Amino acid sequence: MNETEELNRWLTEQVQQHNFTWIYYNFSFYYLSSELVSWSDSRRDCEQRGADLLIINNKEEQEFLQKVTAGNKYWIGLSKEADVWKWVDGTTLTLSFWMNGSLGNYSQFCAVITSSGWTDYSCNMFWRYRWICEKRILKSLII
Image (cartoon, rainbow, N blue to C red; front, top):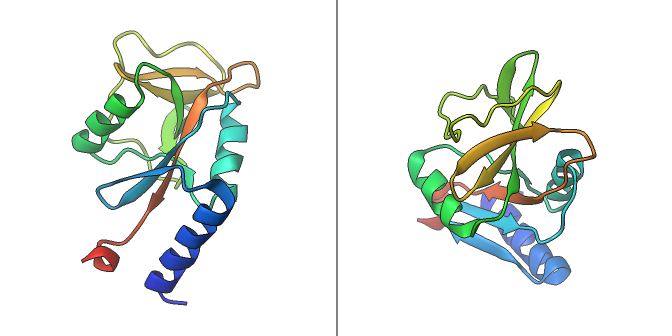
């Protein structure tokens, strides 16, 4: 199946199963949840939707997402293991938007985006927030 057919299949599935509650911005679709769950449960939900937790790639995407969070906290696809922050796709964090004084002392860290920037919380089941899924699409499919 080529990329265009795959995108059409995914879009059709989202409309049928989820009433297409996604936002499109700059070659990505974003799903903003309204429920409160743990980081691992949020990632599992994204994967069931054919996506993954949000990966922020540039300042423009960060500014867009800070606006749509509307003062709420949302899990993103960033966690810290063995003192290294990594995105859900395995890439190491190079560009960050941490709020001042936001990094805590948890044994396992996961990141949250707010309208003010990023902060971290323990990934354990105690912390429950909304989450943002992202489905990237190839620019060639749109042009």
